[in-house]
Length: 147
Image (tube, rainbow, N blue to C red):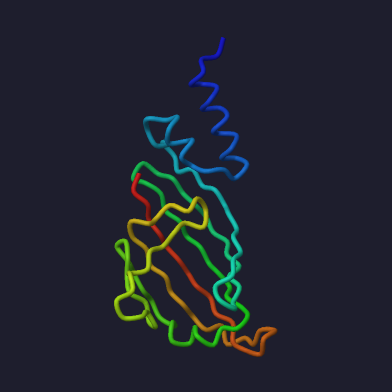
């Protein structure tokens, strides 16, 4: 007979394989995996009049979790010219164009929506013209999450 906890852990693992939240894995295991557990993911979303198409990896180690991700930004991207450069937060940071008195930007995981404890994002201009007639941009993200 299988205990309810083991059955719940098996169900949580199935949810992770299907792209579910990692909290089920954390609740089922008292220790992080001996070898890193890597999950590939994709995400697409709209930011104003631009589209972000992203792909990356979510890696769980004994020290916590890390995500490495690249996003292609297309559409009406004229505002991204001032964003070219590298920005970091622990966990928040002010980005160019922030309104006075606004809260620092936080990075939320595109894998499970957790808030990163530290992150770095680098915006670059690809110098390719998109369907809108404007340049496309890339964002390269490295984000870390406490275990």
